[in-house]
Image 1: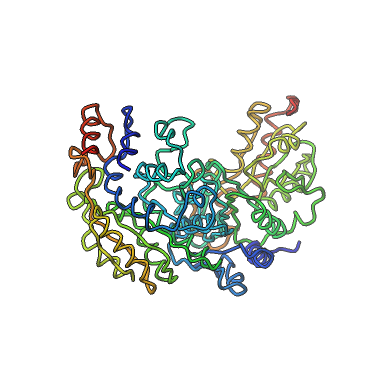
Image 2: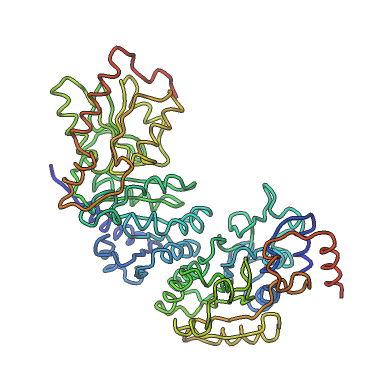
Length: 324
Length: 259
């Protein structure tokens, strides 16, 4: 399947929204070649601000730009956007609900060579915890493009994480895609896997493997992590035996924990397995696949979680009897 | 101004008295002479100069000024820092008219001013953006990130004021965490430095005039002040950084304002 670069889609779409709306301004902290905001700088040099390697100042500067009526897009690696400048984001942007957009680039383990300091496994947890914040984790280039446009349209702070890996175009080809809602990318009748980003492809592979074993896995894209469409999630798990969640993020505070917590409120704690980084920091590796395997973020891990759920729930009734 | 300030302490409430008092004359100059503002522009958010209080804990003296201007209803002074009240413990642009940004986590105000100035320049607006910073707050690294960035972007519409009251929460700044040669530091970052007695109104107005006349560089006014100024028991006394006043102190303070 054709693969596309999310960073490239991001950079190109920023140029498009910048052309349509001259309120859009872009800030970067000496990573514009990697974040691809250099494309915006080439087109609109007076609306691009190189802030130097000073992320905290960059974040508060974005607050000022938003107060002045601009739509600032703040760019750096996810680990610095969510971590280094967390207090600035919390105090001067989220409390007054300012219209600042943050793109955390090189998210998850995707900056495989640079190791723990550059691998954001906690950014979703940090951003989810902030009141007034919206959190996106697009799953392919087409969805990245839609999300950038949604960021401009939404009045309030938004955090979007994108990785470096080239990803197949699943969203582009999906039927019945509804922005902000969980979308079924492949239907199944036994179990459901909720995934986003690079874990969509692994989930599709797992579903194909499980099919041969007589286990039918439904694959659902959950790229709008906050606000979470709980009703949509619940719909997707109705009459399933259990759920798997899969993300390139820590299992602590990520999309998986958001889903499990939300479902617990609705139907009680569902039988669930969470695929993600198991409360560890990242590390350097020679290629992304090697690293994903080290952290158990593989199609095989998803398939195994599904088999375990089938074994654990055999003889029990399916979930989801309670309507929301 | 100080009478309004005292009103906020009338029922035993704890507040940042010291750092509010040291700013009284500076706030008075800004709101009643220096800034191009009006009650209407503050209430409607229309064209005006802006003040960002980076040392957000001194917001009580800003409330005192905004009450005098009629921007905040006088009745709100009693309800400061109460549940559902308009006046939060630190500046909140969402709840309080006349407040331009949320501050309180120290070190961020100058960066917010930088963003405002960048945005205004894109729109061809020349409004001046004032930012008040505490001398203890200069220990925050972000202040210097912003100071560096402001000269990088040639933003001369920003005027910073350092409230040098020489006391931080736990004692004198030179004992607790010394930051020597403040003026030379700002100069090295490309700023024009002005100095003034922060309680001498004519001197302050002259410094603001000079700052406004400087068009090649951003300006910083280093204002020498006394923490707790105006109330003898609180002057230069770190115990009144964040404190309540007992009835005797309130009585003394009211008497001092009569004299």
